[in-house]
Length: 443
Image (tube, rainbow, N blue to C red; front, side, top):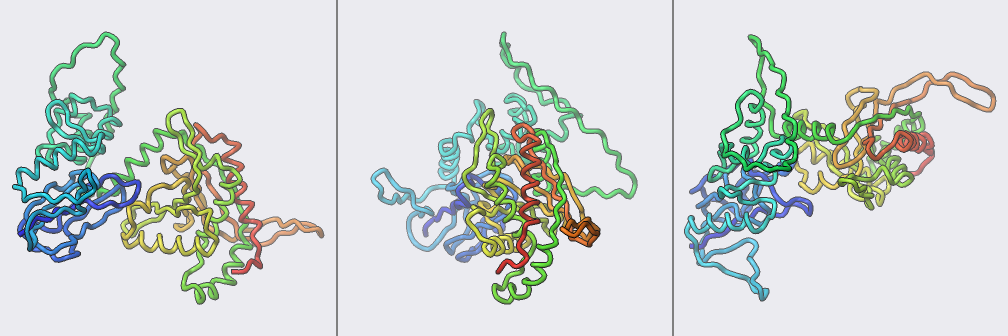
């Protein structure tokens, strides 16, 4: 018999780790080739990890809520054959594949701990020998939790490690409960002033008949991301009204023929994204991020499109290099990403790398909104509902009142780096591109 190491797979260039959310198999269970063994999560995307071999699951090396680095072994599967097998095989210094002898479970656990310490400089051991994942350390930093206080938190993870749920639960009860006792820190003469304590949330009364619904994982992530964005960026919103009558009439004229020819529906979203991309080319300082005192001007134009899921949660798939796509290409990308978002089939890399985001609040009948910036971007555009409105139409023969299709564009931007002139001119330029739509444009 041989032991096969099931490895945390690579899930995109920007994804270095994943959290185990559920084991689909237990130790001792038989596994077929390509059968899912566990579920993992990276940010907002849930994925399954299948087994590339057939065999018996003999050891789970991590628990639920543990954060695992890409390339680490997460389980041992016993297969027919001899020796131990790695997936992928580790390469030795001379480039040849390295085959290890069978290991006892204790030896495997020791090697996994060593790998965690050496593979990632972010996951480190404290002086007490305890591991902290980057996620836990980041939450501790945001909440002003010092090292001594972090060391005193009781962990429910592997070997007593502090999981995300442990630290979130601690933070939730921190305002009313006394901080855990910790060894006194040495006195420093020129110590940096401590961060102000986070105010305790206002108490919530629960009456008879009230229903208590616990937030799911995605809702917690969204809540944390939204609060972080408002704390990071001073938000300003500019509004512009656009006449999109030519677009509405053009789409009504070609949508049947387009669907018959391409097998795709022509929605308004790719049309709006095309106008946004043109405006970004005119005002490239909207396509930036802030890194401390530096402004990072992005080369690629990657448009995130906020999509509501059947659960009511929100996800933002990204159209990479949108400026390289024509309207037909944008339409196919929008439809594909939207469909797979609804079916929870997005890959982790497909929700990362965005440089500007658009959200369609008009889908819900809203005429305008004040969207929250999707960090680390500096701006986001909300598309309001398209409505028939009476409007003054200017002609050489004089002005008259007519019925026009109009909508509001709401542009929120980070006032640290985007002033009102740039933020206002950008959204005005988007409106101008929409209003200049050619009603005779070929498809």
